[in-house]
Image (cartoon, rainbow, N blue to C red):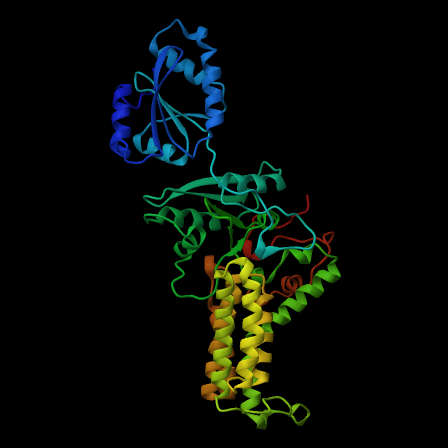
Length: 485
């Protein structure tokens, strides 16, 4: 006996009309066709199926008609599954499963006696893999993740040809039915971390994840108003594959070109693929410059303000630090307006059409900046230091971390303006304490600096040659840290 979902083909047709209405949505398609002289109901979402492949398959089926002229209806149902000239077939057992398959882009066949199965001929609209704008490299692959979850898993599989690579499918949200894949390397991943991700996905109850991976991050880690990013996003398949080999977990969300990597620390957000595309010494130099630039982007503006307003702390050798002309506008207000203005210019550049963005940037930087100096709104030193701070912030590879750095910079600037030197150093202490207290997935956010692991910290600062034994990071808690086989 075969498993029948409906008592008849007419009942299946009534179910479809009850779910999608009759003529209420143009893309929900229901067609009565004949295969092997048998009536079959074909259900699919127009635009999500590959019409050419489906037509070719149905045409080939007609030529096999002579094989099934004999036998009962049930035998014909079996024959439909066994001789259908395609690889991706699945029997449907529940109505909820049937609705999910149709909305996912599968073609559904309901036989005369209610026997139902699906044909995977999905063809989602989307773009081809191309290099991500936010993670460009001078040398390296030019393919990146797309909005198609199948394409993304294929890009990872192409780089990790091992039977230990697992792609675990999950479905979240009540109405959106968003597909989520947990990718990990069996034997390298920590089961506790894997259980944490699975459990949080099972607890997720919402009507949809329209903001895809960002919405998922907030649900997974209950982020609240924490400014720091608890996960690393990447649009590069090579970076994702490298993290999987280290024992990390990748979370792929359908319709998103970014992949979530967990667990991570602050230093993961300061890494870039370019460091590993250059010689070890050059990679170490690039990394050191990035670390220095990140530190300066945080403290340079408030520290310059401190030296400008507290001249008693300035050694005679650098007495020149500070504006030559103070102007009528307080220095703190100048710095705050200029720093916020740079952020507004960045947002304006994003929302401005590409052909106009360059012209808009030039007008804002040259005309407005110079006029602001001439009329006395800003001093020339303020414009210089704010511009340098902005450039240093743009050098941070993680966009999420760069925005967070700006928030902490304003926080330090406000404390310095209110309390002077004590406010500056208290602000640094508060920032450090906050970062040290974070433990997403029970992993210290400042590891290996706090708690201090000398060997691991050395690997953070220095890009060692590939030939040097490089165990999996301690924070992944991999059951097998040795990567050499």
